[in-house]
Length: 431
Image (cartoon, rainbow, N blue to C red):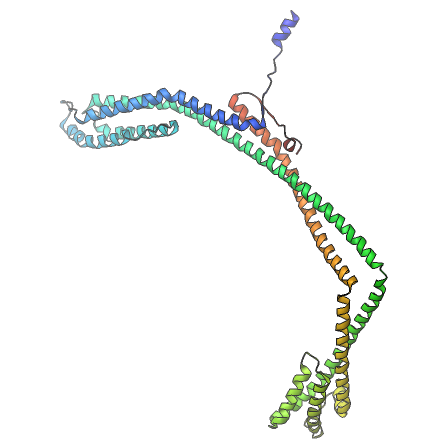
């Protein structure tokens, strides 16, 4: 007895309706097919009745064209009715001639528009015909009402159908989002594997480069190479110092020659002016002139300038200028010697530089350093790509339960049961 009562009082928990994720597209297609078939079945009679009622109403309207007015109708009303009848018939025929498609949804919309047109005609020109054609107008209103009743029947069925289609559409979008995530997750996992492999390969190569660079650093040939580098650096320092000396001397001299050139120009001594101008061009050139050019041009310009200094046409402003033009032969020798040594050092610098650049040890060291820099950049890029990939996957994984829950909810609303979606997919289950 107690067991019997317990069985009665205990609420039996219904098991959820289970469906595999991959079966959902076919399930939704079948659900949509069933919804369309149900709509057709539920509206088939109404569609038939509406077509018949429309044809019947058209007949009533056609008969109204030749109907006689009520003989007891007031003459003024008769006159109004006579003028209103053609307009009414035109409006009714326009509404009743609307095509009623085979598609249920389109049929419903066309039928509603037709009834609206008929009602507008009744409320418009039709109101003047109620007295003149009472029976015919009563029959017309009854015909419109008959169509309206069938439309009301279709309204309920179409409402259920559209609600079902909305649920199906939402479910499809949720499933599509899950399918996109599955595909994206799968691709991201494959990409992660490829990225990890590339990172391992780059790391291994960087390690090998480091070992080779260490071996090269301990190579006995490096000591002689180091001495060559030191000598090359010393030549560079000497070259730069010679250039500074040459620039200082030539600038000081050019300043004085410029004064002399202006005086020669003012005195219209054309030959002297050109001589001085050429001298300044040679001294101010960014390339260091050779010894012969310097000697020739200074031998021509210095006497002219010294004469102007002796005649007090040129005033020397500082001790460097006074020292330089006090003994121009010494200045010429110093500038020519500086030029000679500069060109010698430049030649030696270029020779040692080419020897260093073509040295196998240098070539290999430079090659390894370029490769190391490139690989380090690639390594950083791959690490960043992997980081972004994992962040995207973590974020996307969080949206999977929400989409599955929404999909199950919409499917549950369709069938009136709790739905459980079975996911046999490590991509969606485990992220």
